[in-house]
Image (cartoon, rainbow, N blue to C red; front, top):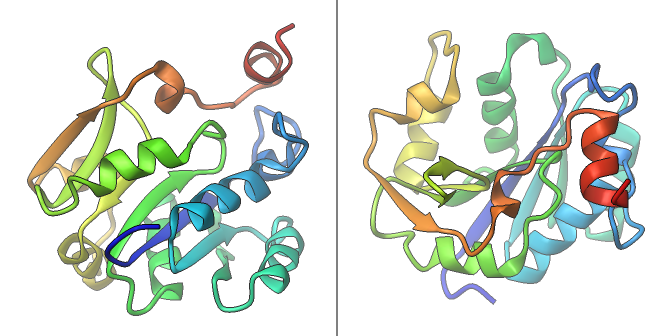
Length: 198
C-alpha cells in the first residue's frame, strides 16, 4: 500500500481507429480486458480512487467495473473525445475531486505494474511531476503532484499538447528496469507482437 494517498486517471476515450475495435476491451495476458487489468494494478498499489475516462461505447464496461468497486472506481464519460487529450485529462481529474497526487495512464499501455508505481511514488515529493524513462525515452504512467492537478483543473484555455503543457513544471525522471513503460498497443500488429508473440 502507498503511504500517502494517490489516485489515478486511466485515459480510454479514444476511438481506437487504428485498432479497429475498442482498445480498452482487448484481452490482456491474464485474460482480463486492458481496462480491467490497469484498474487492478492501480487498486492493488493502493490508489484510493481510479477514474476511467471513456467514450459512450466504453461507458458500459467502465460502469461494470465501478459496480465491483463502489466508490473506488469512477466512470467519467467524455462525451466530446474530439476535444483532445487535455480535455480527457480534465474530465478524469474532475471525477476525483479532491484529487491530490494523481497517476495519469493510457489504457493502451497494458504493462503497467506495481513496481513502477512504487518507484514513481517514492519520488512524488521530488518535483511537480514524475515519469519513467527507458533508454532516454519517456514512458507511462506520469505522476502529477497536487499542484499540477489543481492547475490543470483551473485551466480555461485550449491546450493542444499535454507534454508541452507539463514542460512549464519541474520534472523528475525515474529509470525504468525495462522497456514496458514505452509500449503502446495501437494496431493489430502491435497486439500480436506484444500480447500473442506472433
